[in-house]
Image 1 (tube, helix red, strand yellow):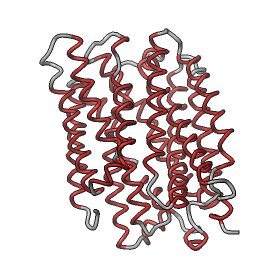
Image 2 (cartoon, rainbow, N blue to C red; image 1 turned 90 degrees about the vertical axis):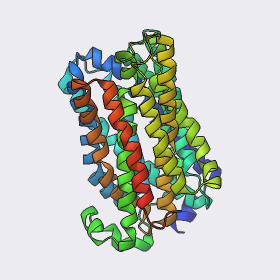
Image 3 (cartoon, rainbow, N blue to C red; image 1 turned 180 degrees about the vertical axis):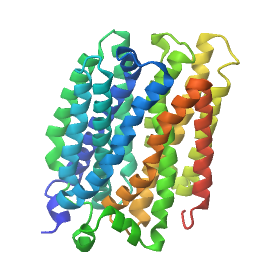
Image 4 (cartoon, rainbow, N blue to C red; image 1 turned 60 degrees about the horizontal axis):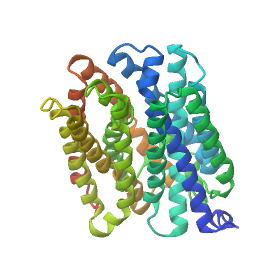
Length: 406
């Protein structure tokens, strides 16, 4: 019995639901962490934007160290077992953050480890999503990203509620850890047992990531272009994930009950991902990515330039929420579309293709915290948001240069 046959001893629906549930677990953990960043910054006495940026910088450093790890594990033990190691480590990292007191050095260490397991989970879980899509024989990857976004939206709403109820991050993180582990335990066995590199590519299983990049076919320069788009998308995503609530807190000076930046952003990410598959029926994937870049640019400009033009707090919140919603809508379809293009056009095995793209794109999350922190320190967080808005135009430019993309 081959890998695909063995993976289908469970129904296609149950396999898909299992993968969806793990995406939900990851999204819930991520949003719980992101929604409490203002509390973490205050509780650990982080001084200044640059220091906070450096602290956040440790996460993408960890993500970078994850790349060779997952590049080794997926061919060696398969994406299913790699997912288990990765997502359990990711969940437990959140748990540990709540129990390290106010030691900023321990926080930095945990952030580094959090980044390792975060990227390992991203790559291995998306490899699983691609394999489930192959079992279905039709584009369904966007639904997995939609489930992640739904969980992240609910996690953001939960975080908003916890903050307004004055519940400490420790208690919040314990509850989320229990919920996430329950989802993992209930669904793990139903994941498809397929390695990211197929039996037919057994010769490629033994080559290193560096060797794979050196020997990649000319036609697979597509992966390099997609990796650059992913890099820019990660600059946008990380900026919104890590600084949204701080933007409402420090730039708008909104009270806690009106600090809804992260919540509205994640809500529109979910809405956008629900609409992504529908967009493919009316637009080419090239057009979808180009529109996404333009909407991202408009959203950042709305939030960063109009902040000084109004004085009324309610109006400030409405305008900036509108900007954050546009950014969420724009960025929502970028990564799912990149994965879908890989599934359709890449001749490189899925796990290896995603690892190559992740290697290229890792500079995005490396750049984001230092860029935003440095500009914020000298000019203000609103000008950092303006600078990141230009990334949307960069996405449009790269997408327009990709040959053979429809």
